Image (cartoon, rainbow, N blue to C red):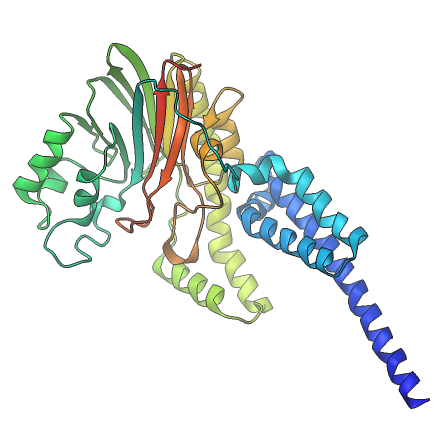
Amino acid sequence: MAKKGKISLVGVVGHLAGRVGVVLTALLAIVMLMSAYGGYVDPRSTSKFAMLNLGLPYLAILTMISAVVWLVLRQWRYALVPIAAIAVAWPSISKVVPLNVIGNRSRGAKTLKVMSLNARYFSYNEDANGDGYHDCVIFLLGQDADIVAIQEGRAGEFLANRPTVGKDLYDQLLKKYPYHSFCVEAMSILSRYPIKESRYKCLAEDSSSEVVYKIDVDGEELNLISLHLQSIYLAAEDKEFFVKNTSSRKLPDKEVIDTFRQSIGAKLSRAFASRASQAEFVRSQMDQLGPNLIVCGDFNDTPTSWAYRTICGNDMKDAYAENSFGFKITYHDSHFWLTIDHILYRGNLRAVDFDRYNVKVSDHYPIMATFEMGEN
């Protein structure tokens, strides 16, 4: 009889655990869906969905894991819940975690390689390997980009006068890129093709900026917009707080949550609202430009955010979403592992490759898209 009772107790515990698992799976699926479509809610009305949207890749991965667990346990009907949620959210998930196994094959047309890099004022790990040379400049010299759009990077005299650069190294950079433009607000461009025009616009009283360039690519006009949208400007203590509490294995208590909401959360909310307005202005500028357009830079927002969607509109394509495989972050500092740097395009272009370089020459990873021109 004791044995029978024991089996019954085990059965009851297992039954309760299964029910808890079902409830948690359903909650996870709901939260993931809210995250996937949080970018459709204007953050100027509420920032809650925008904050939730930041966690989409991680929530999607957890939802996929829950589906696998139920399938392993042969609980098919419970596995349908996360699978259905993933299917509904896939239009958003595929922008953040693209799964391009084959990618776009080259058709042999002329290529144009465009790199985007937030250089953090060329002051991040300047000489990490100790060879006496500026790591970021050495990196740029070693790549085959045709155009390099730089945000937060004074590539003029400021860079030339860095102790780890000097005249010889800087002359090599300008020889490689004979056409260049250096704005006063740390927006720079290096190009192998003539820059016919550059038009700067300050988007806020900080480093939020837009520069519109007109570039002659072998007789064909290319419009390129380099962006740096509103940062959240975390103080050193904010970053230290976030790193400490995201490194802990314990769940955050109420005090930690309140502190986050009052400090980091408040800054995020202001930044989301500012970027929404900035994105609308950028979009209005895009609508006045010719068909061949590349918009790149540090959006400080994800591929499913309100700001990104506003800029993308119905006419822009994403080189990352079309050519990459798997989740690739572009910002790596202070445990804020996010994809916030983008290269969008339209017109007589076709993205055939996308690279995210795993080099820490800034708090952002460099990204580069390869385009074929003459393709619709």
